[in-house]
Length: 477
Image (cartoon, rainbow, N blue to C red; front, side, top):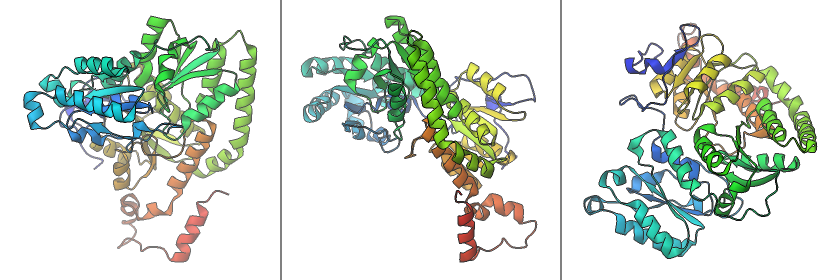
């Protein structure tokens, strides 16, 4: 499989550091037939908006689109959980012929009456873009009738990439901004953008800033609330975590309300600390904020340092492949893995920009493969070629890793533990250690392929005592 030829049309989106001058194409539609790992526009919009826990999320389209639910990417809420319910207008053949506007109007009225949401988001899917339903007029009419914001999300899947879905979501969310009272907001306040609270990360990040003396006006959108978004224009600074998904909203808020923004990451010791220091540096009129940040960083690192060093001794020298949604996350992963002594041999993203890949090139070692909008065969080819011990990705990359006999760590949709912040770094290090040290990999195709030359038949399973011994060895001291 490592000898798979690359489609000629894909060659400009693959770069091997050190072999030729950097010239990488990105931001284009996925190549037909390449079975891209990238999701559609509708998926991108849902990723951004659905963690708003007290809003109604209605999918205007066939029932199959409603399969993209909370259960695929479960953002946690500290209160309401309306976002966990997936509603659809369930368009059928009759609706395609005669239109689905009446069905949409009826569904909105019924759902708003039953659940009393603070706002409603209506997602247009591919078929709606084809038949031409006037979703905006229906939303406007229902909003006037019910007295809540009913917001169309132009997320027809065929019209672009996942990044276009991010933009559609930001446009819908921006219509909420500027509608709330900001009289009691502190001048030392921020909005946190691009944190989705999959494993409770938003709560940890908020705690860091609050300990520094900074008010959090809103988190967009993890554990989000409609009223917080409505008053988010009163914050002094926007702090953008997932730059690919939320930079468009930060740019609009800067243009209309004059709110500056910075890009940060909360993954790994280095980037988490830098995020706290960068925010403290914005509020130069209060030196106590910086001193609080220094004290916080010192205490948090001291609490986990000893165990991180133990893990580092166990995993040093391993090789990892990374394929994630946004390139900014890849930057942090490379730094965190390098801290653990693990070499990154493949790094790619679904939605990276030219400057992102330039940064990746500068961060990566010679002969590292850099990919934009990869497909499963390309990922398989390079994971095998580079002999990776670990694959870090999302739900769609997991089967690739397991079929190749490579350890896998979920850094996206399905995980249940936080990976951001200081405790998140320790959680990540533990997961990496347990994954690469598991005795199960001796029974995988990768192991067997390397032993078949020495054994006429693959070695049999270890005895119960031997297996227990291997399990004992993989435990932390």
